[in-house]
Image (cartoon, rainbow, N blue to C red; front, side, top):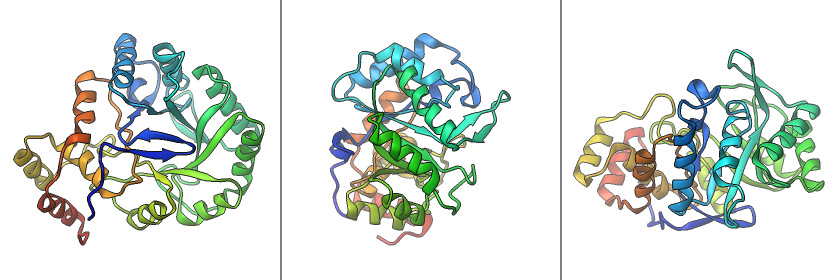
Length: 291
């Protein structure tokens, strides 16, 4: 595995962002539904992230719904010139907190306008279309109709760049025939590596890959190997997991989320954690990856 500048930048659309950003999902209530327990703490975490140099924030108006975007606006508006806010559309929330696919033309258009209004923006930097044929993982199916709606909103000047989330290689290829795809956001971490080949292909194309659940999501990563490596490096297992992702490929942009300033600082410190080659080899072999 070649040496990669973990603390450097990578291109996201026409902007350059630091490779370690922030995901706002955990700013909503339990189950990503309803308001946070401590609204003031949520504002403080966002302000600390930006003050620490974070210039890439990932969000969606279906977090809450409408909760995280309004918190972002309350904490950070007017936004710094270098801040890139990435949102996603393609789903909505039921009154019971359920996740429901929402990619009719009317739903997609309304979602873009909801994001604009709640974030206080005239144009969205990047909008990911969250493909929801299967809510639990990528599933094949044509995305031409919904992505064409998003591309039309892009031509109208409401969206600068378009990405895909929960996407297969075939869907990415189809999407590129409709509009430029500047990023792909799929599940990937030390224990979930189905996208290895896709990451490498996107790296060759200069396309950003943004893994969601980089630390395991609702079930945090647990491994004796991970714990052993962390102990030797005087780091936390989660810092090692993030450092491994930053080392994995230059096009990986991380968006770990937290509602705690302490955890935020721990996450950001992972950009400076140097993994020795032998540690990387141990971590790779957790899933049988050859070095």
